[in-house]
Image (cartoon, rainbow, N blue to C red; front, side, top):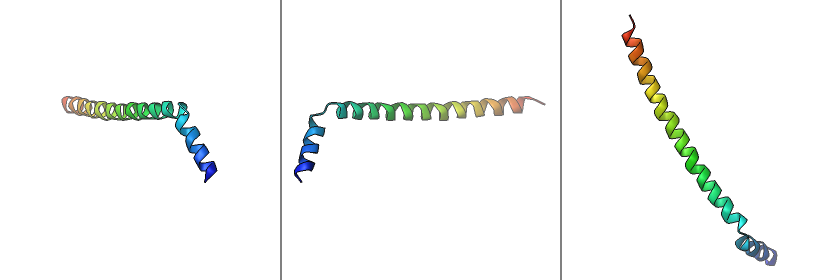
Length: 57
């Protein structure tokens, strides 16, 4: 139990852990933005393709 206490105290005092959490949250936000952009652009391209296909004889 004492070893766990030492590891927990070291983790709490280490600021690299906080930076890692911040970068992880930032990476998650970027990932969601990229996925949303791909979905929206994909829908737009699909609509444009359908319009072009309908316009051709």
